Length: 340
Image (cartoon, rainbow, N blue to C red; front, side, top):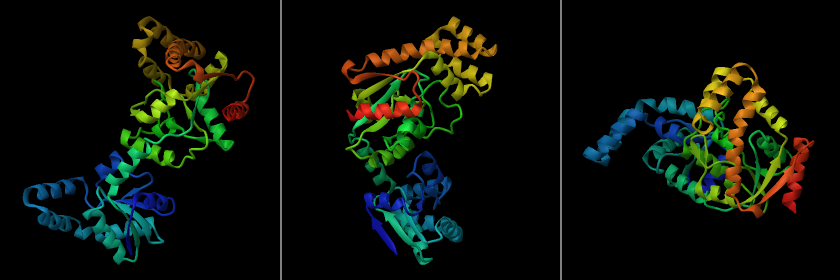
């Protein structure tokens, strides 16, 4: 059976069955429905040929050309689909819910599959993403200078049953000059939005959603405008963490990386630090005086954080002392403060 369903039904079903993206590998690589598997009806070159045929001689000849290109691949498509979904039930989409997904759906249907076809295709999904990212939530922000352990606290809140979104995890970047270290390749801005929208739509608006304080850009991806503006207006709990603890946190995150890699990352903030201070920091790094190296970097990052903090309304920023407290205790304290 082939069922054409709307976007909300499609998203609900995607939690239970595999999803197939039949667009070209290039389209899929740029961005796709999270967790979808690419079984392209046409590869990048074939898609270009069909598109050219459509423009030059019309739809009918383009359809014939498409069948000519894919006809001998049907067996492979079925093998991939059976391996992906042995229960023979899948969700599916192409760009607009048109010819490509209908051809693949018909093929799988003849092999006994139940296919849930997204009406409007990926284009409809992107409309849903952009609309979802415009919705408002009850946000609270975990702030604090670099090395304050904000991400660790965020995860502790999640362990305690709190509602959180880790933007840095979705962006595959920790947000500083060193943020790409140990991370996979960053998604495109569009893919970041797709992943974020799935999390955003699942939030309970009656509960607090915890986010870590971020700049508008996390590496190369951008936080959607409506969400970023809401983050800047939200209540912020500014963690006051002793300097030595911050240095130890940074060493924990980055201290094991090769010094040449750390040096290249350090050079990224040369314009802000100045050439002399930069060279001093690099000298400390190469001499394995890591505490001194981090201390010099924090001079720059602390000034940057202070400037950002001053842009917030003073009555939305609450100072939270963390001295002597474990991450679990800090998380419980923040939950209690937000509850009040």
